[in-house]
Image 1 (cartoon, rainbow, N blue to C red):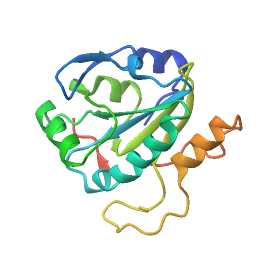
Image 2: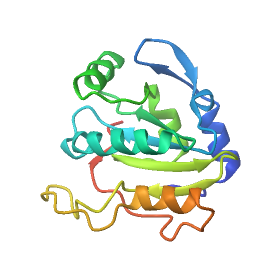
Image 3: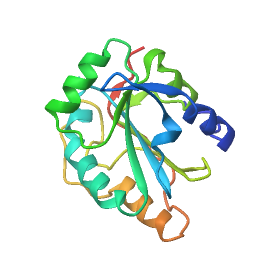
Image 4: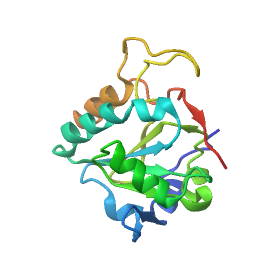
Length: 178
């Protein structure tokens, strides 16, 4: 589980260079948004992770123009950069997806599940961590109607200057493969 995600820990993670789907090494911080950044830990294989791509694309579209950048990260050891690139194309992921070889960033940020999101502000302070919404109550269970769109609520609260009402939720998905 995640230790204390202080700005120093987050900043250390953001300073890492990861490989994008074009094979270029980019520092995570170079992709940060003006107001904040959503780091989305994805899997090419996990059906729960894949099922969230349309929601993530929609949120990326809505919040991108409000200064929030979305960055996908794949830290699963068996999933190669080629797999990640093919997956991003097949699922039409509309934000950058990077390969975290050795799960260096995932480990620093305490990621154990895909999908999971970490939202940080422009000063590398943690705003929200956990699930995208509550459509899954357990792994292996079917999706239900969303009652609480946690990520969307957190972003709206953050952007309107309010304290995030539920800053930490339990992600449901597939274990990160190391």
